[in-house]
Image (tube, rainbow, N blue to C red; front, side):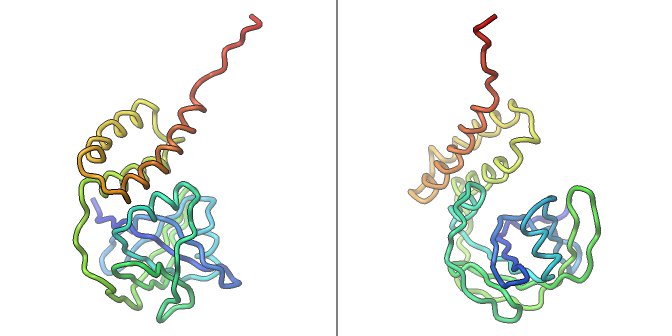
Length: 195
């Protein structure tokens, strides 16, 4: 299995507007693969401007926020590429696309790091932070997984939240649970009372 690093990827459109999205970057030798699903703004931006920044943050609210429509996180300009990165991150990589492997579902953009910086000390993830990250990934796959799988994973992840969550993790968990609750509502078939 390849190493996958969960990051907040920022890309820019042709007009310089920055878009952020949580994505797992896949290690491949000295390269990192960005594999956005079709269709997506990240995919569109990488085709228009083949550069990205990967911000590494321990604030899991950013991951939960991005997958629940809360994408207004402070950004700051990148150092070597045209674009932006999270202002509050522990480190970041600036990436240049070297080639593209086309795919019907997830094209793979093979990138090399052209600049990297550390901005703070990494303290590691708590169990609650890891649970929020896992639930954030799970919520992006609600339409792809059987409901029993989602519920089983959720029940397991909830243990870490109940035992170890800080206010930040509780807030992030709440946002994700709003999305899970809405998804659950789509699973219930209306009863035809007319017969």
